[in-house]
Image (tube, rainbow, N blue to C red; front, top):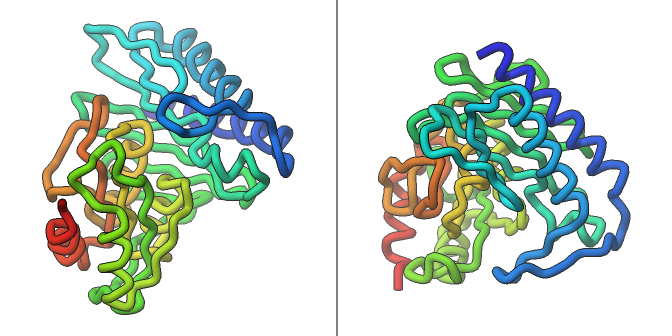
Length: 260
């Protein structure tokens, strides 16, 4: 596992440099079919991941946002979002990360997330805890939705039974404070580090979810799909709910009442 972690950390640092070198107020981007932007930076980092993993671990699969290399008999899958937060990145807003998880039999066993602007390197290994720049982190102890801080991302187009506006409003009615980062992984790391009490994701993409799963749970929190069930993180997901654990059932109940 040590070699896997070192590979992930080196990739994160290299990806961070590419992001910083190209971070300007208005970088050129394209709009994909799902109405999300993509830049040359997304493609460059995705290519770096494919080349690195393909060279070091040729029997492993890679599931990444822009291009994947899936093998039918692979025991391990590297699940990567080369640039989570492309929208803010594209317009000069410093809320974005590099994210990579190593998944075995659908379960993340290693996760690394790097925020190159704040130089925050998050890492977690199964059964070994979660860390921010080598300091152990834990979720907070907030047991009420009142004054709890959340991020809700995804607009419900992919999972139409879940109403983004209702979820957002219902949290506010509980006197929670609610962000929309356009970078779910960034907010997931803030759950793991004890700042946010929860993060809710209304899309089906594993590359946005795998690192949150291991990081938050190794920090003492809880992560499920939108219905409170376990799920695989090497295929399409039923959204994601990541919390400190203490408010998890309250959040699931609220999401259930928000379904259309």
